[in-house]
Length: 171
Image 1 (cartoon, helix red, strand yellow):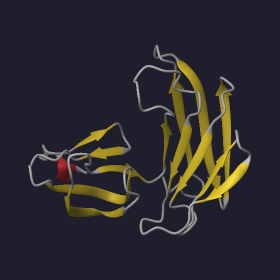
Image 2: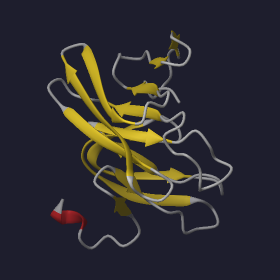
Image 3: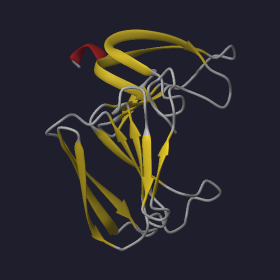
């Protein structure tokens, strides 16, 4: 969005993540959400752009939004930065539109590609093709089932219904 060129208090992390750091002690932040639907990675709340958004955050939070038609590979560990990223990875699928395909690559700890996933939605069916390592992985579907979220893990071979939330998503 060319209207964002002058904004210096927010940034895009890659093509799919919008980050708006909090610069005030009170936690007040104003940011611009470009056109489309954006889901908060931390809360599941949905923002529809283009729009200016005002929020208040504490010291452990910030606006971190994921663009629709995104698949994020989320690691299984939060206690260290260097581990086997593919082991137990969860693919978070954000509002994947019918006919859309996303490709995500999970690297090794040294940066080489370890696994690649092609995630495609056709009508109400989502297919995943994996190449590379044969680790167990899981899914988290965000805003796909109109207020219901299903999580499926190949490890457990069972479904989880995350219930209804105001953001139409689950974590």
